Each structure stands twice: as C-alpha cells, then as structure tokens.
Image (cartoon, rainbow, N blue to C red; front, side, top):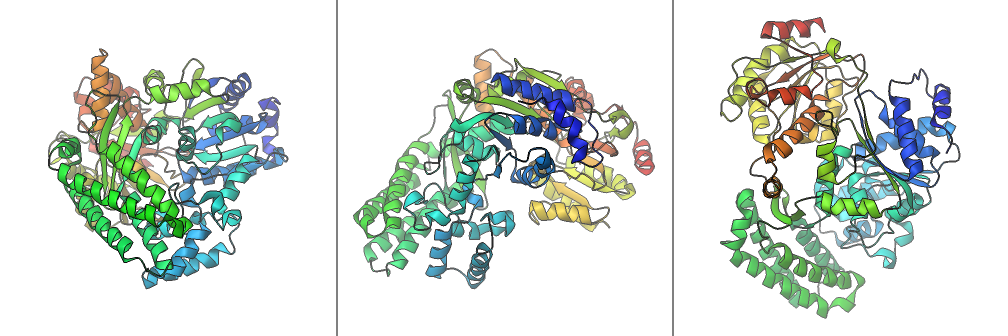
Amino acid sequence: MRPVTEVFDRLSEVWQGYEVRPGQLELAENIASVIQAGATGLFEAGTGTGKTLSYLIPALLADGQVIVSTGTRYLQDQLFLKDIPMLSGLFPDRRVALLKGRANYLCPYRLGRSLKTRQQSDVTEARLIELRQWSLQSRTGDLNEFLDMEQAGPLVPLVTSTRDNCLGSRCPDFYQCPLYRARQKALEADLIVVNHHLLFADLAQTDDHVRKLLPHAAAVIVDEAHQITETARQFFGQRLSSGQFIDLVRDVRTELFLLGNDDPVTLTLVDEFEKMMNLLRREVLSINAARFTTWLQAEGRQVLHDMDDALADLSAGLRVIADRSEGLRLSAERAQRLLDHFALITEAAPEDGDFVQWLDQRESGYTVHLSPVRIADELSPLLADSAASWVFTSATLSVAGSFSHFSTESGVSDEISAIFPSPFDYEASVKGYLPAELPEPADERHTRCLVESVLPLIHGNGGRTFFLFTSHRALQEAASILSGIDRPLLVQGHQSKQALMASFRQLEQSVLLGTQSFWEGVDVRGAGLQLLIIDKLPFPSPGDPVFEGQSRRLRDEGGNPFRDLALPRTAMSLKQGFGRLIREASDAGLFVLGDPRVFKRNYGGYIRSNLPVVHWCNSAIEAREWLREL
C-alpha cells in the first residue's frame, strides 16, 4: 500500500481549495495501518474531522477488495456520486460499485406480471406504465432514480422481489435483472459501497439467492458504526411480518389469474386464508405492544390457532398444484416456510432466555421479532473468524472518553482505538439554554410549556429551526400548538423525509419537527440552521422489551441497568441529535434542551460532559440576545 501522505499531498489537484484538517491525516494513517495488519480498529472522529476522506483514501489504496458500509441509502449515494468521484483522478485504475438491498432494484419479471394482471387501480396501472418506460432508459434499475421510496407505498412490492419470491437463476429475466447485474459488478469491483442492512444480511446469510460478498473482502469499513447493534439485532434473530402474508396472497392470486382462474378450490383456500390474515392483523394492531407476550399466551391463542390452520390448508393446497407454474411451485415452498416460521415465532419466549420477543406495530402492519438479548454474542465470533480487516468509525462511539459501552454492546474489540476530537470551536459558536421552570418530562404539561417557552426564540431566529422529539405523541402536540405560526412549518409524516429536507433548505426561517429518524443521518449543512431544540433526554423506554431483556441479563450479572446501559445510550443519542446543529466551521447556533433533569439530577453532569456545549445561558433574555447576534 502506498503511503496515505502521498495522496493527501496531491489532494489539492482534484479538490479545489482543499486543506487538510486537524486529525484527518492521522486518522487515515491509523485506518491504513489496521487494514495492512489485518486487524480491527475502532475510531471516533468528531464532526468536522473529515473522516470520509480518512477512510476512503486507505480503502482505495488497499490491496484486495474493500467494502464500505454506511448507515443509509442517502449516505451511500453521497459517497458514490460525490465523494469518490472527487478522488477518481488519483485512482484511475480502481473500480468502484454501489450496491443496495434488493428492494431498491426493479424486478423486470414482477413488473411484467403486474402489468399483465391488470388488477390494480387506474392510478397504479399508470404508474406501472411510467415505470416500464423509465426502465428502458435506466442503466442501473435503481428505483430511487424514479421513485420517492417513502411515498411509493403499495407500488414497491409490485415491481421488486424478496428473498421469498425471487426465482433466481430460473427467472426468464435473470440476465436483465438489475439486482444481479449490480451484484456481479460489485463482485468485480475494488471498492463496494453498501449500507448496514445489506452488510448484516450478508453476515447473517439471510438471502439464499445471492453470492456472498464478505468472503471476497480484504477489508470492511463501517461508517456510522454507532448504529450497528440495532441493525444487527434485526438480522441475528427471527422475524415474521404481516407483509409476508400479504405478499404471498398477492403472488398466488397473480399466478392463478394468469392461469385463467380455473381452480375454484385453491381460490377458496386463498379467500379463507386472507380473511384470517386480516383478522389477525386487526387483533395484533389493537393490542398494546408491551403486553404482546401475555396476549400470545392468553386471548390470542384461538386466533393464532385458526390462522395456523388456514395457512396449513393453503400450504397443502398449493403443493397439489405446484407443478402448474414456477411461481406456484415457489409459492408452495414459501407457504410451508411461513407455516414453520409462524409456529416458531408465535411460541412465547422464556423471559430469562437468550432471545426476547417483541412486536413492532405500524399503520401498514406488524412485525413480530425474536431478537438476541446480547448482540455481542452473535457478532464477536463472526468478526473473529473473518479473514477481513475491520474498521469501525463514527462521530459518536465513546461515552465519557471511553469505548467500553460500545465495545461491550457490539462485541467489537477496542484494543486498537483512538478518539479524534472535532476541530470546531464550540465555545465560540454554540450556547446552550434550558428554559426556566419547565415541568418534568413525565408531566402532561411538559410539551405545551416547552413550546410556549421557545416560541419567542423561534420568532427571534433569523435562520432555520430544527425541533426534535423523543415521541410521536409529543411531536403531534407541538405541531398542533405551532400550527398558526407565521413561518413555514414542516412536520414529519406530512411528507417524505426527502421532501421535508428539500423544503427545509428552500424555505427561509422554516421550522422542522421530527422524531428519532431525524436525530441522525440528516445533514442540513449550509441550510442556515441556527436553533436546535430537543424536547427531552432520549432515555430508552422502560417498556421496551429488548431493553427489559438486556436489563434483566445485566442485573443477573451484577450490573446496574441505569448506570451501565440507559445512561450511556442516552448520552450517545443526545450527542447524535446535537450533531445536527454544527456541521461546518462557520456554523453557529443556540441549543435548547427542554429537560430540567439535566441540571436537577445527579446524573446531569455526566450528560452535560458528553456534549460540546461550554456556555449555558442563564435567562431567556440572554438566549434571545445570542440568537440576535447570529
């Protein structure tokens, strides 16, 4: 590997106005040494360090194939479309590929089937025709080029495949398949840009139809590494969703339609199963998620038994007609797998076991999870057995100057680790403020009192305002109170995330309200954000079954769940939220935290010490004056 200093010395040739940042070169050298040694490294790089270049340059210099994994599709696109092309002049021979999960790629076979059935609404059919026209011109088949995936809704399953319904090499459109072409291109590339979901799907080997990436990789670089424990939890366990039942019914109906709907026996079985499927969905969405396990063992037993019978009947019926088409053969296999999976995942898990059962409810449906209590037990052996070097980096990996919390939770060794502080002058650019006499967050008056306290600040802010919440309920209450404000009000849920962020940038003095998904992975660099408000400390919910399971395990081992689990997580999450405010050296702003516990409770000093806020305003007058100065 060439020395990284050699590349940094030439960066000004391809990057106009480039100047090396404090810590950037040192971080790059650390990452290069980890890759060369075949080791594992853990690095925190504060905002403004320039960590993207610090890992991209060693990745492009490395011998062998390197995988770079990011937290979101947005960050993937930024790396592939912006950052890497800037460096391409210095690495003309390196081949780079972008690879996303299969739900991002058009499935030509399913698009054709959906157009043939003509069972959709006129609007959906028109969109399918537009999609076919786009597909004839697209070089990648990446649906993000054509659709706002958050808003596409029911269109997506009509034109994408899943691991359950993909025909693989038996598909008549296999050689035109965008997913398989992207996978093949990735396997031939020197640098592959993926996201965490795809990385852990590969680690956990959850897709039978694709060749695995990791055995080919010499190194894996994981950016936004603070997200990996929650992402991994989705893959190192079991899950079953209402969407899997819906997809099965849709695909079976499509196959029967294309065969002339000449099988009344199977159609009746599908009808009966669909009735039970809808009944179960209504039942599950009507219960409190926290008492899901109790429901399984009590009033839920009968509806689960009936659902099991209906699925078993459908599975048996599909086996009888499986030889009529490849789609029916695959559907029969899916139905049997779902039957086995349904029995496994609806059996109540023991409270003191290694896995915890929990329910995720959304408007679109539900997912039942059986997740490992401790991700480190799953991830640590995989990393140890891997032939690749591993680099984990993020702006927020340490708590109180230590990696021990992240290392314990994830199983990633912190033997080779370093912290590179942000070069930003937070003392000169940020002040904090806690509105006086706020009620405690548990008080039902909290949200209203907080909004009333910050209204003068919003009105006095010459820039944009970001208002972050720890719950959807609080967000909706705040949105109602702020509905008459004389500034553009943007509320999560009213538009897609992508559309909201575009509006936030375009509309001067706009106010954006968001919950947890806006605490990170949202970069408002250059948008004139000057006021960031966070409603309360983001403690884990005490009713969260995963947190309860981890707390129980920690107590059994002599630990303290609040001190060892809740506090470090809260400090890391708050740092992520705060990180939205200052993205460049020229940024400045006011940070408002609407939680009096940060000064009243004995743990408040611990929380504050993990934030780069040096000065806290003593009054509303001082806070307004600081905003006016900006």
